[in-house]
Image 1 (cartoon, rainbow, N blue to C red):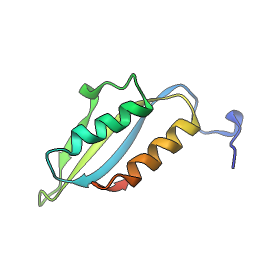
Image 2 (cartoon, one colour):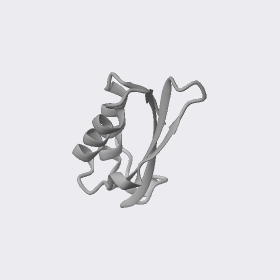
Image 3 (tube, rainbow, N blue to C red):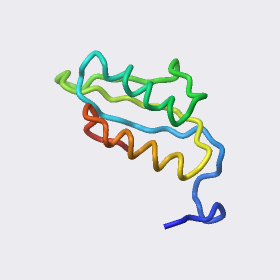
Image 4 (cartoon, helix red, strand yellow):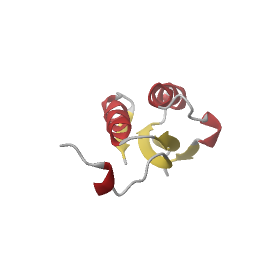
Length: 90
């Protein structure tokens, strides 16, 4: 389903936060930064926010990407969702 720009609640381009919960393993941040950069080459990894879960089994990451279109967001959400280390994408 195509959403017309005038019907979107998001005005592009914009900085858009994407929250990810994944397994607390050393490679999580590196792998997901690489994945985000494939969809947003201008992403600045220094803006990444990271938090450990209460028991330390999971890590919460917030990426502030440069969103330019609904299609870009949809494909990035799908790629993150499909990653084997990711549990939740918001």
